[in-house]
Length: 535
Image (cartoon, rainbow, N blue to C red; front, side, top):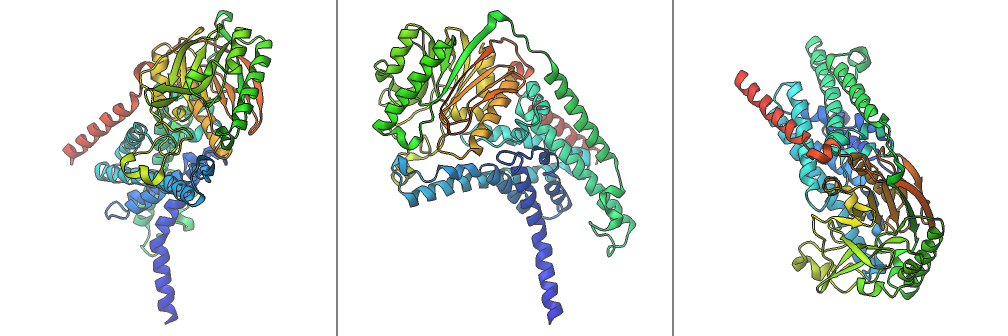
């Protein structure tokens, strides 16, 4: 009787083991980003999933592991979403706030699982028995799915951002074809390692009896056998880093005539105070004093965070900050609310030396639930409005340009940092430097650090200097190689000035957008067709 129970328990464990391995490896991928930052795990974290998918290809068991891997990765990487709870400062009661927060976190994690399930299905169905074709198709489909996901409103956790800011050498591959170049590198290396492992298992099973062909037996230990796939994976990893190092090592021209001394103010106004008169008083005081201090340091312009002054455009002219601009004559980029009919936008305004508004950029990528309600006709009555304003928030145009007294800039407001096409399009249209204005105050410190990592990728991809101003941290200055010249503390009031340089270079990515993904898809289709003809 006891033997039967032990046998059943062993069978249950054997059944659950693939799922536990898949979930654990997905969690390992989630640990590559802040707050842990174990970026090196990205080069092996897909291997267990790949092996499970390939070895169970004849059945249907590859789908649950892929789903769990996606949940593990995105769930851990995006755990900072839970930091928005409680939203009592927005008038949302504690319990509904918890429900909304868990729903948002759970939904994005499940969506990641769905995309990984699609990836596994396509790779197995089209890849067949040829390892080289599986690696090609697996890489192409992963990149295509990330492109598809990033075209929608819910996007953040690309494989590429697992390498930022720690492995800047490999992030430089983004200059060739955007973040999908880095994603392709990670997937291809993982796929080759996995194919080497599965090849090792097949050879072991051919050499030994089924009873002795154990995955973790001494005779089949990976260090006892080296095959061509591991050699190719090693060569590819080294080659890709050498290419990245070549791009990283190129000198950055700094002509004096293109210099621009920019000051940043980190106002450190908690979101819970923004709706109160005390919060607005502190905002006026902190940003006005910060502006005056930076103006006295001889800066050319001052950048403030998203929503630095939480008022409408029509009321900006009466503020102490704009009065200071008129007095000092130093250009200022001020975050506030624009108006469009009965609705409003989150905007960044350029005030010239006379205190006049000469340009405006409206945030075009809004945060679902945080800044607008998807399917509002259905959910609006349940969720209510999460904005502190009475009007509806609307997105800006997708094709805006942002001209300043110093030339055209690449503008980004908060969530837009995750969307590389926003930056690429503006760089192609003549943007010479990046102005990133954000408010991450309602999240834990891991989120703004991930946000900083996203801005580093955008600076590298477009080959531009970047000034990043946030409400509570992390504010920073970044050079075109992604090196952080200065970064603020967290939950601190700070001002800082740094010289950046206007640039008009165009990387391959800026010129041709993401050409690599369609190229890989084309090669995959060709390879699949050739395999069908041969077979």
